[in-house]
Amino acid sequence: MMTREECEDLVAYYIHVEGYTDLRSIYVVMNQEYPGEFDRKQALEIIRKVLKEERE
Image (cartoon, rainbow, N blue to C red; front, side):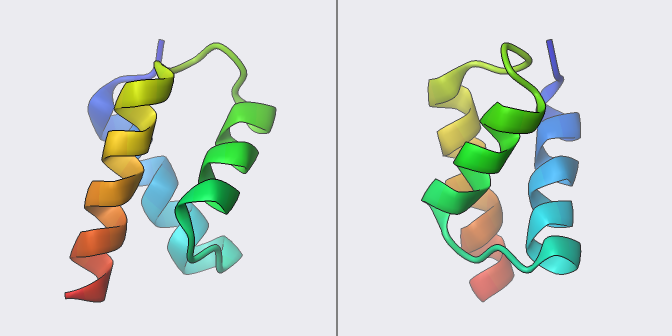
């Protein structure tokens, strides 16, 4: 299982390097590349948090 910090870093990577800007796109890619590595509810929470931080 991915730790919370690893998940946050991955989301930041998808935003900055890959250019994803919405929750659904980020979650779908994470789920395809790392199936079973994270809890869905927690991953969505982390994605929302990182996206919010990036917009501020």
